[in-house]
Image (cartoon, rainbow, N blue to C red; front, side, top):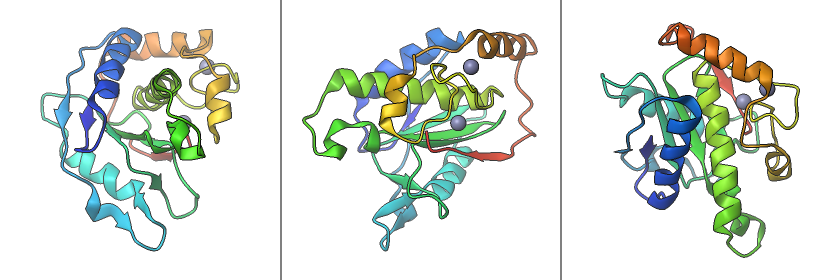
Length: 187
Ligand SMILES: [Zn+2]
Ligand SMILES: [Zn+2]
C-alpha cells in the first residue's frame, strides 16, 4: 500500500489491515512522491493514467503488487472522474479518497463513512489486481459503482462467485502480470 504525501495515514493503516485480512496476503506501507506532475490545470484534476504508470515504475522488486492511495481527484480523458484504476491481473492500481469524503459533496466530514467507502474501493481495485472482473451483483464489492450512493449500497465483501474465483487465483500463486490490459474504473 503506497501513499502520496498528502494522504491521511490513519486511513492507509486501516486499509492495510483490511487488505491483509480480505486477501490473506502480507501488506506493507510505503511512501510515494507527490503527483503534481499529473495535474491538469484545465480540469483541476490529476491524470490517473500518468499516476498509474508512476506507481507501476515504483513497485519494489520484492512486492508482487502495489496499490497507491491519494487524496487527489483523478480523471481519465473520457470520464469526468475515476474513483480508482487498476490493471486487470497486473501489478499496479490507484485509489482516490477525494470523492469518498463527505466534504466533497458539501457535507460534514464523517470518518466512519470514509473508512467504509475506502475499504470497499480498495477491495474492488485489489480484486482487479488479482484478476477479478466486474460483477453483476450490486452488493458485491466487485460491482461497478459510478457514484458514492452505489458504493454505499455494496457490502465490503465479495459474493460467492467472486470469492471462489479469488480462491482459485490465489491457489495458482502469483497472477500472471503479463496480462496487463489497463481496466478503467469509476469506482
Ligand atoms: Zn461478485
Ligand atoms: Zn472495477
